[in-house]
Image 1 (cartoon, rainbow, N blue to C red):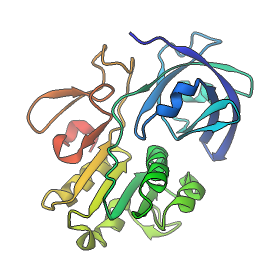
Image 2 (cartoon, one colour; image 1 turned 180 degrees about the vertical axis):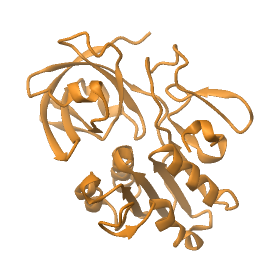
Image 3 (spheres, rainbow, N blue to C red; image 1 turned 60 degrees about the horizontal axis):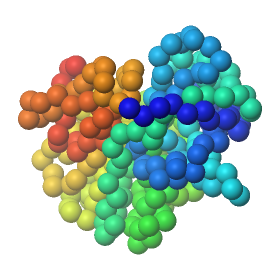
Length: 270
């Protein structure tokens, strides 16, 4: 089994209220990370909270001889609250990169990203990969949040995509309503094999997207947000049901799946 390694905090800042961007100095092997993969991380200096937390990889880059990894996350409990207190020079134990990443369709004409909240993190990493490897692809992002105050990762995704369309549930910015309803208005223009859709966000959002796409030929991959305890498939704490009736581990067989492979039932958070 893979072992945890030490990573040094290079910097951390609050980007919008309750959302943090942490930069970790990591081994050069992390440059092989794929968009959609994640790490498990835990505090080195204390035993509480005991369990590691999963974090999507926001980006990996080199500066001089050093390699850095960015993590964009929201404080949602005691674990992430503890992480938000880390400062430059602190040490974190990490395991990764883990899981199955997104597939990059090198000959695809248009890439559509649909992000909810911090789901923008792995999609931004994916957009960077498309920008580097598939320069002829047009990249469009639909970015949703609860309110203007919750919009995170906007500056970076705007710097990569040709168009970013925003929605907020409370109507404080952009389209007033769920991001999937914003996307629905453009769905008719996306119904051919020259499009690829990628999405990450809360399960109710993904279920809504599944309903929109179920009768179309458009391929769509989604990254599931599930609670994970081990990150390597041993504890079976992140199991979900597939449309074939089998069970898969989000941390091991995912977190990225074809949207039509997952059974989006009431148990998936809808």
